[in-house]
Length: 334
Figure 1: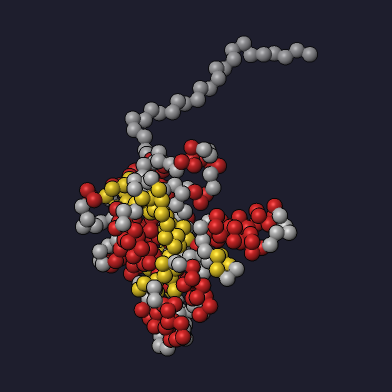
Figure 2 (figure 1 turned 60 degrees about the vertical axis):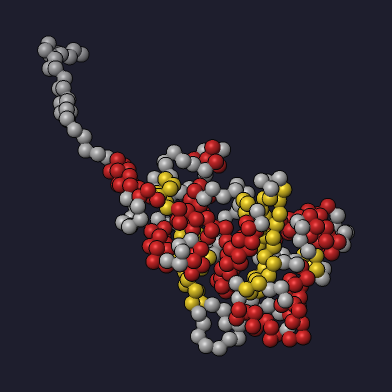
């Protein structure tokens, strides 16, 4: 069979060339980047001079862990949100994040007094900004009653988010071993826990006046975890060993008192350097409340902690231990 092919094959149709453009519209990513730069340059309207802003988180700044773990493999909680990259923070905001992170929960009243020179309006403005950036949470909780009459007091407290915890880690300049916390835990104990910061400030003033520097804080969470880990290791090594003997050994290891067959754990431990770091010191602080029972109070008194209590709590405790007033002799007032 024969096929007749045309002698003149029509030329293949050419695709029209894309017209040349003299200018390109910015991509959505570029627009977003420009917007972030604008926000970084003027994060909020304020009457505070720009010269007071001290820290700027550049896009290339990363936590030391990012040099060990590829960025795409890092846990989400360890990442600073994209909207905070390039963010400028003032000195007060940096200290706020650091202090709240170290103590988990701090009342706005104490923050205004300690950082903002008793100017709550400036604190309120900064909290609003930090909350908008997803770095802090502000909650209002009821104070404990402890059998007292009348309406309960409402306390406004601040905690860090996970992003705020990471931001505090990068901006605060705290020692590498300083643990930071995020989130509100045990709302019923918020009033007591927020008073630990107040006791720390009084104790820190005493330490610094005596030449102490580079203060580090360990809350009872960290101390309890360290103790439990040590006890578990000793019991695993020798299951037949007496538990009280193990506890006493562990108490010596962590330099805590062993009273009435129990390791006494303070609300917070302050470690500090002396003589330009040639040696270190420590102070254990405990905040008493009206909820303490005489036996508990007796153990704390024998432990030798630096004990603090508010005036109202001390009055309640005094009535409760009428026959043992000596237990209250060394209590410091918050």
